[in-house]
Amino acid sequence: MIRMDGIYKKYLSIIFDPAFYINRNRLNLPSELLENGVIRSEINNLIINKYDLNCDIEPLSGVTAMFVANWNLLPAVAYFIGSQESRLINHSEMVISYYGGKISKQGEAAIRSGFWHLIEWKENISVGIYERINLLFNPIALEGNYTPVERNLSRLNEGMQYAKRHFTGIQTSCL
Image (cartoon, rainbow, N blue to C red):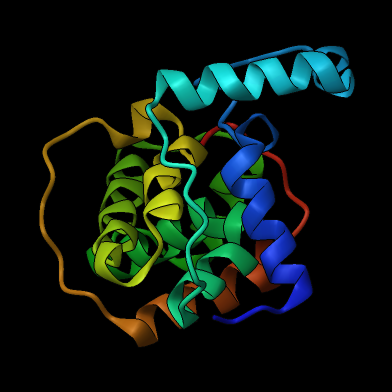
């Protein structure tokens, strides 16, 4: 088991504190509620129960650790991967639309395609992490029929590097 303290601590936070990262289009709560530990705990229990999330603690594979380390960037990673796959959006347009909070229909298709790429890693990541990936995304962006894609580690790495360079610290609900 990879037990890097920071990654493992973040892993536990992802498993037990979905209120911290759930897309605001899924559940929009006033920040005051999340600041109260008792209320936050109850909100987390409600989210875990509503989505029937697995809370088993599993050993962290390399791919799981990569997903955990880049957790809040996964929507931007999906956007990048989908944009690369569809060749519909260039990097400048992608960054501008992300910062502007408006995603075109082509952008939604890119997010969906990138999301499908992320979930193709199901066999290589922990069940708890896999089940929570969709909570990061605006549900509207994920509407549509699932289309299987081929896993591509270099594309995943490239997407994570791109997201780290351009999207670290950005909060948006458009994805």
